[in-house]
Image 1 (cartoon, rainbow, N blue to C red):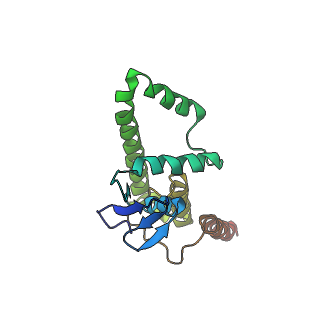
Image 2 (image 1 turned 90 degrees about the vertical axis):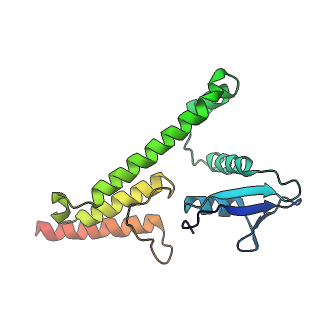
Image 3 (image 1 turned 120 degrees about the horizontal axis):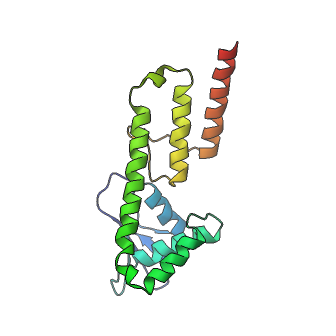
Length: 180
């Protein structure tokens, strides 16, 4: 899904239902969040007025995750954001946040590239399992935004926690063999 450059168009009907124009079915906020995690750009528009509602719905997705205890934004950051709406900082904050997230994405991409490049540690027993765990960690920390360069998507969906447990068990098995 992430291969498409054109944003996925979601139309909001008067009933507040959200309609995916590509698949011709109704979607939920969680579905939209999943599209975004997969790397897809989304645009949400009001069917009647044509108003762009994307920002409103993205903020709603963030608010729902925060209210469920999936806190990414510390209270101090939220407080500073509220303050920025009432100060001269409002003109600087969006550019600062965008630049900060770009630096984060670039840094994580470079870290993953460095782990996949040929290096002396690659010959170390268990390195592949460690690299896979690192990749899973980055994916979990970024909500799937970042994946390792050249990493192929897994078939069958799989649960991240189960994958990590399997990788850990594999690494433990290799370490046990080395100790004998």
